[in-house]
Length: 396
Image (cartoon, rainbow, N blue to C red; front, side, top):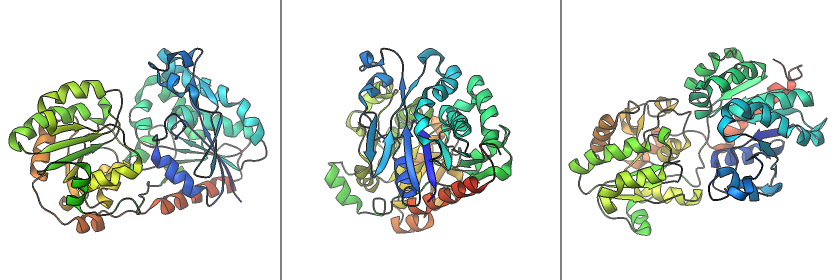
């Protein structure tokens, strides 16, 4: 059986059980095909535990060293990083930090999988070389669209990614970006994320609204991290125009993040017509999807966002920015509208057009159908098998 060591900082843990559900779902499906160990790293610096209320690293200080998550053995080594110098130094510090934790895997791993380009993928390339096995680096979106644009990480990735045996991207647009970093196109595979069909499928809208206590009238939904680069403040600006055109419309925002305070201030004048729901567990999201008339995702950059896949599987139209792999998903007007990023006026007009438009949810679900997590994991497994079969030791 193929033996895989996954290295990633974007994975659930005891302190953040809702983190990165896409990695958890794909890895759980992958673990049925191979022996998978997950190194779910935790950022750390001296005294981090004393800053639990003010630092994300502090909040993670209580995470145990070992957990079992959906049957997967998850280890949580600490990786040293310097907050103000994180982008410049994190890759090398990350690699050095996990080196001692690699010793038990010597001669017990066939391939290393790094999930997230930097610092995880950078460190995974080094880890694979220390273990004498090939490396596959899986990319998601912001790791290449945002982090890889910074000078320090870009230099690190321009060194590391061409040395990976294979690179996996979730969209064609992301694959094109990786070519610019020196990775030969014939070593890039596109493996799209999946959708849990048991959770995300067309449901009754009225029943969902009654369950959530939502008012009648058009309902727009945002689900995701509350970060400026997700366009959430653009949405707040756009909603002022939407509210004038559709005074009975409501916007529900599900999620948390660093822009939460600024967002709350921006939408305060709208009262109950903008509802800040906060983070929700994954099994609760389908009810919110069912309740809405349209999902809105105004990101400045993306890979292939799972929330769009989930909305389409739920039979809901989408208003989103034409970035990353989103145009590969919203391919016809029946599925929604695309707008330029960072353009609140265009976003508002698209929302105003979309919310009152009636449509057949079953048709949206059929037209927007993509594979589930089993299919996604099967495709990733084939890439890993191909890498492990190559007669290489961590080099292309």
